[in-house]
Image 1 (cartoon, rainbow, N blue to C red):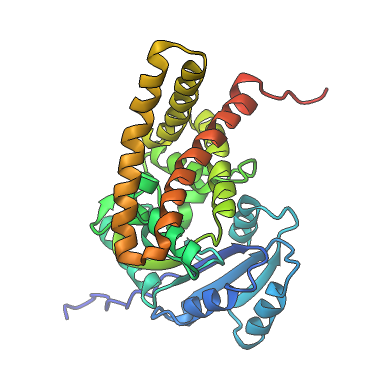
Image 2: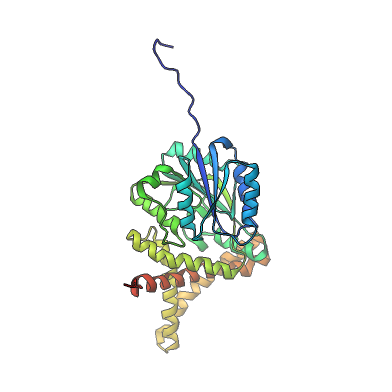
Length: 344
């Protein structure tokens, strides 16, 4: 060593805060928390903030029990009971220089955090994440999960099925550098749904990058019924309108396809019922290719996932597209065409 040269000190690992916004997750929260506790990343460089939306089931007692034996778990209250307020409560309490959102409905692979740190280091991106394995525990849920893993079902939402690394417009359960929130602000608390998409789009518009690698892996439990799937994607479509208003344009043109499909169905059906000669042909031109694609892909996925899943896959495809499209049109009416004005 040359005279006067300072010895190199080992770099200390980043301190990581995992924020889990949840409500009434008694069925999944323990598995979720244990998947974080069993990470290959050093536990002394990790804190877990569970932000609870005033659960009415045994979720809180499960978290409190685990917190008694693991000092890095903290339970925080979220009286507003929606995800963006939960995330902001967690961010204000977080000590980490890396922030990772994890939903109570999912669990992480053991090297999830380690792979996030690697991706952040080698890419310089402001946010990184990976592919989600969607799991169904019953036959209907398996059918829903299969549809949600398909590009036909979810378009180019790469985090649902990607097998190659790429830069993307959004992803789930991302790892963010803390300075992102200091630079562009916290989650938008108006957005009951789609708040992560709005945050990610805001990040990209500010010049940031979001990197996806399938080395980062998590599993997510799908909705268990077609009714709950309809409600979920209806809300996604509804709130997407507000995201577009706030950001000035869609993050991806895929967000407009379901709404276009719905309006084409309605117009062609009305023309057909009204007796216009081209109405029937317009309706067939809209529905026939769609039904053929739905049938072919549902058969293919049923062969891979079990024939009992076939009707649920076909119906899940239709629900993913129709509920999102109908919700989008409702959002247009609510936020753009006939916006409600505040009382003075």
